[in-house]
Amino acid sequence: MMDRDIYPGLIRLHILHHAAEEAIFGLGMMEELRRHGYELSPGTLYPVLHRMEEKGYLSSRKVHVDGRIRRTYRATRFGRNALKDAKVKVQELFGELFEEKRKRRAGRGDGR
Ligand SMILES: [Zn+2]
Image 1 (tube, protein in one colour):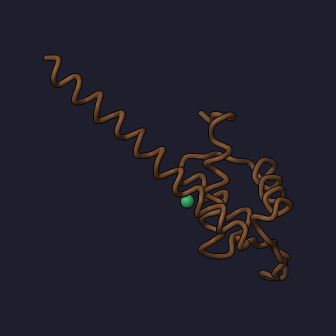
Image 2 (cartoon, rainbow, N blue to C red):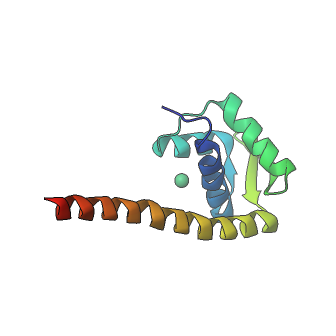
């Protein structure tokens, strides 16, 4: 199930991460996100990419592929910096999430 309130930020981080590593395009990113369990239609993903470009996180250009035009996206310097900052926060959050799990497990162990 897609949680519409929680996942958008995670999806944007995925996009930013991949666009920082290489040029991405809509359909390829859709497949990549599906691999991670996010089912996005083009009607959902394309506006996200567009909006991220508008906000300055991504820049796009048109390339010709097999006689068709494809829009590819790369992370801008602003986008890379945002990703760097977000990584610190994600790491903290992950630490806490998994710390919580360990504590619960430990607690259960002590209680018996
Ligand atoms: Zn990914």
